[in-house]
Image 1: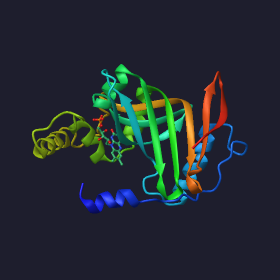
Image 2: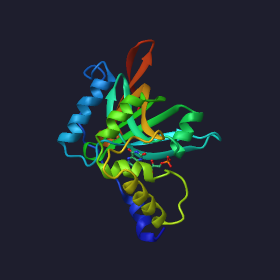
Image 3: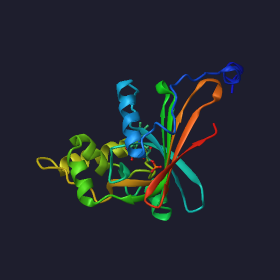
Image 4: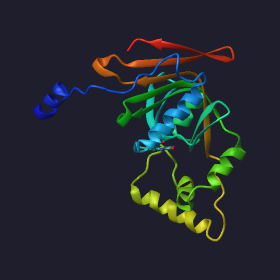
Length: 217
Ligand SMILES: Cc1cc2nc3c(=O)[nH]c(=O)nc-3n(C[C@H](O)[C@H](O)[C@H](O)COP(=O)(O)O)c2cc1C
């Protein structure tokens, strides 16, 4: 790394000034608390507040992280969509446990979620897929996500193939594409505060209920 960039890293310090997050005033249900924070992120015009990092682990214990979009919360789960033959899908088949992380910089907030992952019902994926723009539907067919391509042309060729194949008809959902639901057993809400004395409120599932505690920053 060049000297200027190294100096930047040595010197960058940003203090956080978020409003307090308190264990006695947060919601009892982490999904309700998530909804409140998500709404605040939308209102604060955070760019892509639905973007979340998804971490999975492969057979060899190697973690891997990538960004996916949250498409909803339902039945006590966080939902995202992807290719069922991608690397992340292969990881989830072997280890159906994952972590999610939201970072909302403009609000100095982070949400950390851990839990188990299942595929959603095919019907749920069908409904979601049907509502996507046609170009994205074709893209789902054209992309063998995570597999090696010879070049960009190969991908564009596949787009043409499926554009022609489905011309004049609705694009069906590929059986290798659909949703996952992550059912959390813990959710942490992190609020940046001055002097690195951040607020960390942890929800942990015990039996059927959530316990709420505060963690040291
Ligand atoms: C902002 C953003 C949103 C993304 N949303 C999705 C998504 O919802 N689903 C998805 O499969 N990939 C999404 N991606 C691409 C993934 O980060 C990743 O490249 C892809 O899923 C392949 O990951 P894998 O090879 O680990 O399976 C998104 C990337 C970015 C930067």
